[in-house]
Length: 499
Ligand code: HEM
Image (cartoon, rainbow, N blue to C red):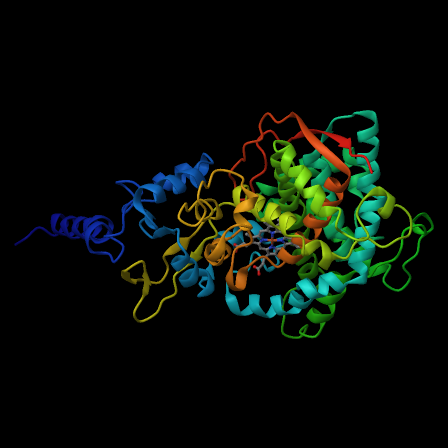
């Protein structure tokens, strides 16, 4: 008679070897895809180590250079670097990976960034799509008023003072604050929005809290400093909706809380079947906008100014283009009551557009993996000729690697805005592969808002100043999910140009 215990051990061991070695290494539909590392079919340890040391983005780029557009990072994880991959995964609306739910849900309450499933996501996105469309934003009188106040009364006077005194400016925190003031004013109205540009020491304290917040668990984040701050803004907005005046704010024009109102009204109509408490559903969504809005645009401003500061000849070319605006964004035109140049006129400037694009290409604020999961379908998914990829496989692309495909972007490591103006037929592929805001149904909600804001601010700065670098130590990007300069600073000098 065969002893039972050794037999059981043999069966279990054979099963484990089959399941964890033979199947993933030799039999899985993923087994013929190039491996990132010898251990990748067996365990995620190798790629997780790269993740934990912050080198994942650069490692994935190097892997694609070596192995081509598809690489296996773990037993059930692939990285794809091609237009084909973008079409299949992102235009194909694969659902988000649970990573988003862990890192982006605020108040234990779901929002657009953190939602994994497509159906509730699409429902909530429809509530907000119109007010973030390019045409709505360009025509919005609220956003025009906000732009006028934030530019003419806040940031440009600060730069003027710095220009006159020769004071060196750390542009990263100042322009991140600007991103926050723009976004919060559009969300809550000018009077309830922030004015951090005018109080940089307070802003730096907020940033310190936020650096901690980014690495906290959902539980730790719950009703801490940042969530409490956002809930406070929502409560103030609700309280002053009827009567939008208080003594110390009389000087500020009143604008509507465009996003707050739209979201609240839309969520109210589905109150019976949405289990989320209304105030937390609103606060969770709006906190994501505040977070997404300040850091990413602050990074874009910083790198565009850094690149331009190294190219005085391009600053001069840009200024020539900017002076075709009527009214211009020179101090003589933006001081006083006159309206600013129209967003559509600024948007139509080709060199400015090329410079903003090139900055978002080379210095993407969100350069890391945007992970999705393959759906469970009868025939599986096909990617780059590898068929029958089963459901539940984590698949992702990165803006960092896509933006360095040299067949589409020759000399990919150089900041060459002219590439967007001289591309000829190649422009179609360049635009399709341009991925700073992601693509498909989960693409950035605020991309039009961000572009309108970035173009206005950069146009106003370079209509009036030349910039030069005083200290750029630590300027290389820290390739986390959001890629700030490692040194968290860029010191520039602003010199006013004559009329
Ligand atoms: C230069 C500025 C910005 C960049 C580079 C950027 C980048 C991105 C990226 C890459 C995503 C996609 C994430 C994914 O698919 O996993 C995203 C999503 C999102 N962004 Fe932005 N963003 C910017 C500005 C903004 C602003 C100003 C707002 C709001 C006012 C905003 C709100 C959002 C929201 C709500 C989502 C989630 C969209 C969804 O899942 O449907 N972003 N952003």
